[in-house]
Image (cartoon, rainbow, N blue to C red):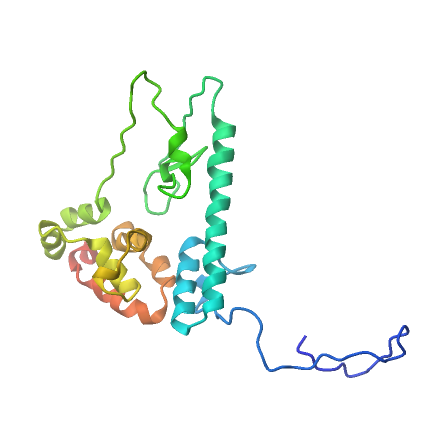
Length: 242
């Protein structure tokens, strides 16, 4: 309702018509953010996944909407807490065997990128900070330890090897931090302003050309950012040609 009176006024039987009408203040309630395209929306309104929230926060910051930034940041944190409680705390309680061993499932054909995923519980994506989930996992062997290893931009490197793209090969030889480069493009910031969290948040966009999910990923990026990002992809012509 916008506060306009009804066409046919009726009297309240309790007060005999003595009451109050809403009057428009000319102000709009809410965060005053508009979906840029259908990729931002779901059947219930805005999507609330991590990537969309990050883009909305960027948009709110650009508009100077401090209230929207505060709300979206807290909502994003609430999502992280909810995932932690549901996926890890409840997941460990549910899937730990009577022997105190936990065997997570690794799935080969679930993600759109072709990467392995983990379920029951999702131990592949344990939070690295803020939640002490890793402290409860110990080696099953007496005096043993758990080692963590990770590849650096594996898909991007494989794309360069298979396509023999000269720019990717040169970037690898020069030890270029490709994720930081992507972050400067997506978030329109300087290399020295790229934080560890900001770098981690753009990895899926770096890998887009090599995982055949370029179109849906680009749909998540607002149009002012899309143009320079597209140019960065075109810097690797070998990956597109092949």
